[in-house]
Image (tube, one colour):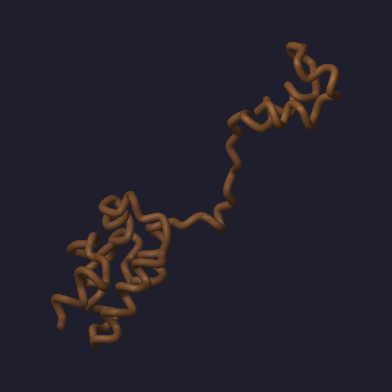
Length: 119
């Protein structure tokens, strides 16, 4: 903080208290202010859409299943689970049926949970 103050203010003013309208004060308010940035809907991961488009669930099934996956923020792990299941010969329809019954298995860790049970 002192280093920032010494770089932004002339040497004579560095030790004096800052008036409310100083440039450093405005800069610090800007740096430490909390602002929310809106994320565009296209960049946001929506679990319900992912379940319907990628996993083969109907919109009603996807809506119901998404309630069990509130912490799912990305499709990286679910894609890995689906790829693992496809690699061992499970069809997309069977995956959709299993997801409709228990969608939480989509959050399974492939290396720690699924692979040891198959091997």
